[in-house]
Image (tube, rainbow, N blue to C red; front, side, top):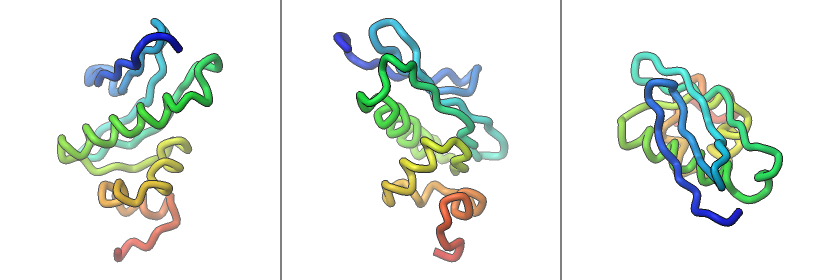
Length: 106
């Protein structure tokens, strides 16, 4: 990885993109009624293990917070990140809390 990671939000295609050395990684979501349901994260094999998914998901959740969205992490990578980062769990919908095995009445 020689160049900086550039992360952008592609609202039209409902995804956040990370461009690394000209190659795209992404996290895709569905959106309805103020809820972003993260459904897939893709990191090319050549870039796995370099923290790209972590950066991509962190930026995605920060922008979700800034936009006032709630989050349902159906994507296993996003779910794992949110489970390991309690500071993001206030974004979770009741369905998201259930996915992570957390109490709904928190």
